[in-house]
Length: 331
Image 1 (tube, rainbow, N blue to C red):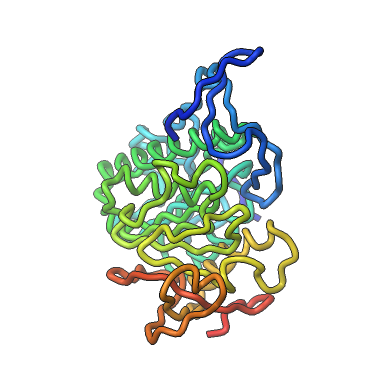
Image 2 (cartoon, one colour):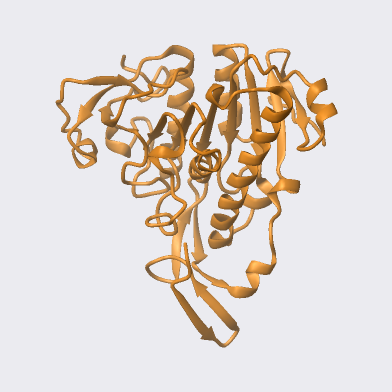
């Protein structure tokens, strides 16, 4: 492996002229869907049955890159099953481990990973594992990439279990953070680890057609503590609460300083990185997510969004406002 350098169940089966198609999401067949970078793509939500034969094998095709303070810029690839390579790496089971999962049509060298890798290593001497599942995410077939999201989540869970079996690392010391489709995948990985991961953060998990009502959508029980940040509801991100704690900065859309859906969508990982480095982002508890959408939240409880430490035991929906540029936190 080469290191990297950082600078739904079937609902309808229809016979069409070109063969058998599977309707995998509600609504019109052709819909606009945003990728992990917030770009719109017109996708066909009816999937040819033959597509299921073009399988993605994440256990062999995913690539895992380890970064620590000893190698903050050049990764050490970790290959599942290669104990010698793992033991020769800088992975330290006595330290906390962050696992980062990118979104659709992205890869290990994207902005999401670059921003959060730097933030985590600045916060603490720890293991940061960047998951490259681009072999499964780099398709315009949205039904296939959704299926690949589920497959990759299972593979990530198996990878983590293998690391722990070799090194003695504890799931309680893991923090899985995923963006967009990766946000949904973070929950799937945690579910495959029996909800024993210490902390999972969903950063504007993918919503829209394909994930509303989908059986593998992010769940509050996917980790000991789960948190979701919503910054592009109704666009690329999921509208309703998903986690034990859900934050709706600025009402979940139209982030200050942004003029596009892609900017709104990206803001989540910039906010999260700042929260890891500096804290801040105090949210006010809301009676419901509908109240959060319009900023009508006045309950006495407050809670900090994001951050390095899990807020185990906390629940609810929270609203806060941000600045238009860094530093984004108003306190």
